[in-house]
Amino acid sequence: MGDIWRSNQREVIAVIVLAILLTLYFSTHPSGPTTYVMTIWANQCLILGLAAIAQFFAVIVRGIDLSVGAVMALTNCIASYLIIGTGLEVAGGILVVLAVGITCGLINGMLVVFGRIQPIVATLATGSLFLGIALLLRPTPGGSIDYDISDVMTLDIFGIPTTLIFALGIITFFWLPLRKTGLGTGLYAVGSSEQAAYQSGISVEKVRLASFALGGFFAALAGLFFSFVTTTGDAGIGPNFTLNSIAAVVLGGVLLRGGIGTLTGALAGAFILKTISSLMFFSGLPPLAQPLLEGLILAGAIAIGGADVLRVKNRLEVFGK
Amino acid sequence: MNNFKRLIPDIDVLVPYIGTLLLIITGSVIYPQILGVDYLAQQLQIAAFLGLLALGATIVILLGHIDLSIAWVLTGSAIISTALVGTGDPILSMLSIPIALIFGAGIGIINGLGVAVLRIPSMVWTLSVNSMLLGISVVLTGGFNPKGEASDIMVALATSQISGLPLAFIIWMLVTAALVLLLKKTSFGRYLSSVGYNEKATLLSGVSTPSVIIAAFSIAGICSAMGGVLLAGYANQAYQSMGDPFLLPTIAAVVIGGTSILGGRGSIAGTVGGVLFITLLNSILSVMQISDAWRSIIFGLIIITMLLFQSLRKKRT
Image 1: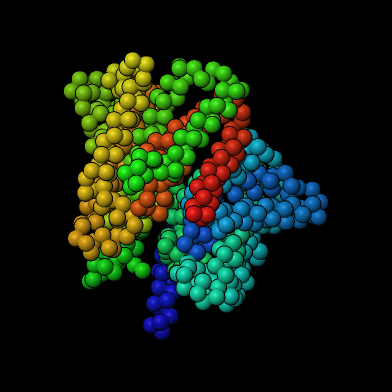
Image 2 (image 1 turned 120 degrees about the vertical axis):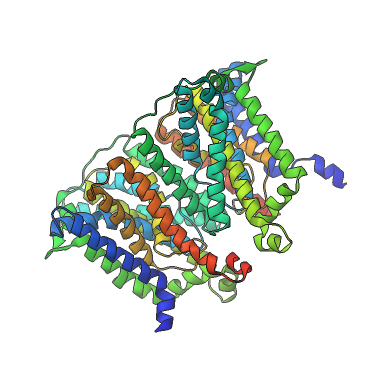
């Protein structure tokens, strides 16, 4: 029991915090926990959640992805051209959007693996590239997304928000099985110690590439859901999502130095972050004070995570590995 | 032989300067006015804003950390200095620049404390400091552009010229020289790189690594604040999020200048070259009147090319 607690401590704390925030949110919301309120909340959370998952795949192998927002903007703009028309056209459009995301991820991965550029600067540069292409496609916001598919993806099934079911689906049918595969183990091995992973016969290069490709895939999914919610294409959506995705993975207990944390944690972190801002919106606090409070809560949460250091007896332990 | 080697600068440092020359040459083929004295002097003036920010960022990156609060330290110091001048009080107006710089140093110390004492990754901590500064500014200004104006001194610092050279450029060069001396001639400079290489070993050698980290972040804060004061003088006002477009070019300039993002290795001279390169690239792209989209694409591609050039060259040797 102790072991299970210790190995999942961070995620459990994140989920408890989320539950408390959520109770607060639904009790302060003027209309209470109706399906409608739940759906809007879940939609907003899932978009950031998917961006956080994209960030998670970069962070877990000891990288960082500053192009998450740009990939979202690019896929959002492409979606606003392609996801319209007959069922077949819509399905094809979704496939193209996801393929573009994976390609962006692979470009990042190849620059990091073969170009030997540090992830933070490589993705900084590719972010500028992807954003430029997005601006080329949509210099001003516009276009439209098929309403039927948008409704299906962003409303509810028997009173449960579709996006919430989707989030649970990702954990159950993608993340938990992935953990058991060689790639799942490889992600953690490469993130913890590249050298040890290499010497254990793991193909570090392939794992990194796969990880960045998965990151691109989830950034595209985030862009896709953003499109379903807004039903329009906008190249300017990126910057906020990039920074918030980093904050979300940290809140969810993923360590930026790699190797520690889970996809579930990243998702929970994103839900916490979004719930805090929704909570503020209905709390009756002066709107002008809200950005400051959001910043304070974020800094507080992160500082509490860092407070472990004050309990360390041997000063050298704080350096980690 | 060793002395001879020292005379030839490291190729990493030369790369951005060569890039800048290539830009000027190719640019002047299309637009001959690029070779004009006026145009080049104007570029040096504009480069000074990015240049000051990049100097601070280099110090922090040498340490193996990163400062993402640049944007709002810049905006904050611009708001503070213009607001003090805007009060009309001659004493407050005199003190506006020192107070703005103290503000920068103070935020730098907060950044450094979080990183050195609480051991929070600098990327997250400075990001949340940035969002708190944004929040404070929204509360204080009501989300509108703050009232106030730049003092005559600020305007002069940012826009006047001394024998053909922009004063802003001279300030940038003076700060550069001071930081080069600090890095080369003092023990602080050596500690900085050694913390970047291996913090544990540096602490075990008896260096108070937390003080080195806090000092480095406060230098970076002062540099960002100087950038903010000059930019406020240049625009004759402060405005919300005036610093946002500077963050990414700053980091790009440092990295193009050959400073390793992992810390320990790099140089101020390289950063200056990186700043000149990026300023000129942006300027030429806007002279050519191409759309934002293509500017962003070309910017990304050129930075990728330069990074690839640097890292693949190292791989060979």
